[in-house]
Image 1 (cartoon, chains in turn red, blue, purple, cyan):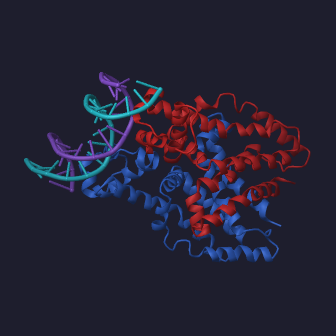
Image 2 (tube, helix red, strand yellow):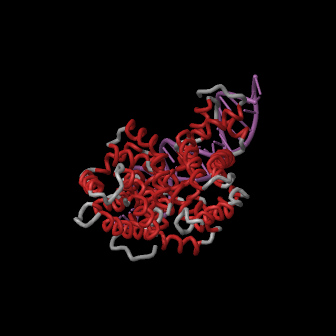
Image 3 (cartoon, protein in one colour):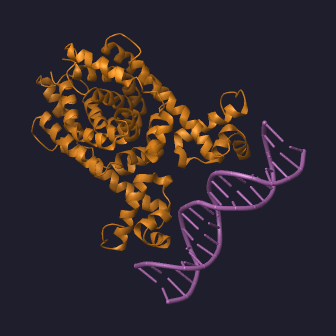
Length: 202
Length: 202
DNA sequence: GTCTATATTGTGATAGAC
DNA sequence: GTCTATCACAATATAGAC
């Protein structure tokens, strides 16, 4: 439903993405994916052997869409604060366009923590380079001395949380006003950047 | 299983809490709750009419356990930074003892965002008082001028995220070493406090 | 109150016509 | 490749004995 599919397989995958990411693995019914794709259940099994296989395809794509962004933080020789600004801007834009994916990934991984090994591969192998970069700026007196991992975990958490906790945030802080909540999100990237910089700069 | 139940109803509720909070509403089987409680399925329906009712009982308790902590931030005349330290300490301790509840709440609410109205009640009615308290310290030049809601959302996000994202955090930053991850968590409350204070103090 | 047995519906998966 | 019809089993819920 919606866009014209190039082929049936892609059509199914698109439908599956939508349903799985919103409802989760256990909350998803094959029938609903079929409806969403405008076909019948049998075709799902024709293209993807089982619900399990279909789910894996969806999860893999979602996971890879969100994780490798970390590489952006390394692939540059510019100062950390500049790279940081660039990353936050891109990452929050990405979440904006796919607001349900972070919660989807977190929930499915918590249901099946060991599966993460299959998805990670070499993606984060250059994380040590990022640590070096940050520690370099610490010895240069630009950033306060602290565990670089704390910075990175705070960074991801601050970006992701307002989206993952949408119902609570929207209800508690914005009286369930969708518009006010959205305008809060639009301002968020600048707030996160300022918050982090103020916290870690010397 | 585990502790001796005072009565069957409480026994069922304990078992249901364990299973629902770990597996989620859709991932939970009534049979598994029955096994966990050491009884049979029929008794579940005798005490709680349906899976739905049992879930609601579990969710309500979990939700109220975690939300009203916000009140701590208001119920004191001490400076905000002191109250903040106290809150972070308590809240992270609470999560430590119930590490799966935050993810459980976030996921279930995102599946059923409208249901939040039933659970909130007057709990956050004194939030404006907290805003006033923070804004007072801004005009006093103790805290940087900014939207108090940004501070509070960051606060919750920083506390909750390392637990909700355990598999990713543990894998990406700690090579899946549970012990290292745990020691990171133990240090977390001080890190979060420092991070926030450094960021918002003038 | 607690159990066993069973009803009833939901759901993933397959068979087979076209 | 795509459909309809159906199987097989899983899961919630209830009936009824004790």
